[in-house]
Length: 285
Image (cartoon, rainbow, N blue to C red; front, side, top):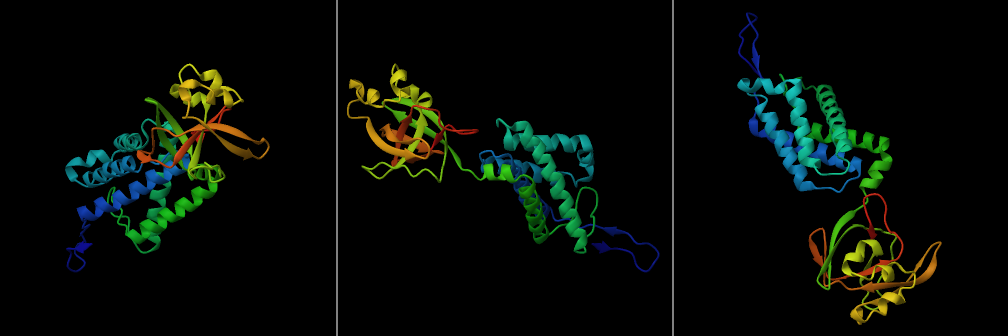
């Protein structure tokens, strides 16, 4: 703050705003907000999109302090820009409306916390849309808000902490896509190779075995292993589960498998005749 007034005749003051500092502070805070909102909604984290959303928000913050663009600080424009940030971050999600509402709620709580903590530590209100804030205040505010929301939305946060991956399979020239939950309670592995076993329902793997849907869905897995076209490609893996006893699952090694875009060679796929999965996933590993 610079004071240009000698004596008591007048007392004008001016905020000194560093554009680079304003940009990076908003970039960090906006990224934390969209990330926190995503975790509370229990969706798959898409960090690149969140970074792009944060860049948009930081650019808006910089433009909002320019006198000739004062109109963008009006409530309607703020709402439009907030909605655009949410769409950049969460566009295409099944829970889009929920994500947008949580985003606005977290933004309001986060902004209030930053304001209050800044004042408590001797800060000032700044001018217009600008509130001077330091990185320590930013970190304290985010930690406080996330802790409170974690308690309020404990079930959502627990769901968000579950890791779900996009899986692409290729087998005998055919493709299948899965949403796979990384289940820490799944101890199934291939006794021959020691590789991890991905368990998927027959309905999601039907595209890999055209004309064999009945054999895939049969509780007698020897039916699929007896198919001449699959000779040497299908083998049985023993399993046991609480409440269902033990048995055998037909399994195969894909020609290729990618998990979140990363190719893997240490995964065997087992075919479950019954549905596997829950909200947001259809297979287990």
